[in-house]
Image (cartoon, rainbow, N blue to C red):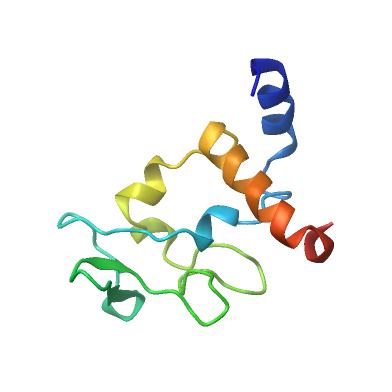
Length: 104
């Protein structure tokens, strides 16, 4: 991906156009995270991760607003994930390629 196409894509991602694509990724928790217990589960290797619901989305995402209900207590990995950066754009493209008809 070249820098021009990446920056053009990043310009289209904002709080109003974000589809919370990253909220379908597995989020591993660290010992410093202060996530409410009801949003935590254990993965098959015994690690703590954010719980996801049957639809694949993080349990902390409000399905009506697509916003994090624990934003102030979100895990460090979520804090470090930057809207519009290359990881965001890549995940957004993969998500929209799989679910584009539902989110066009």
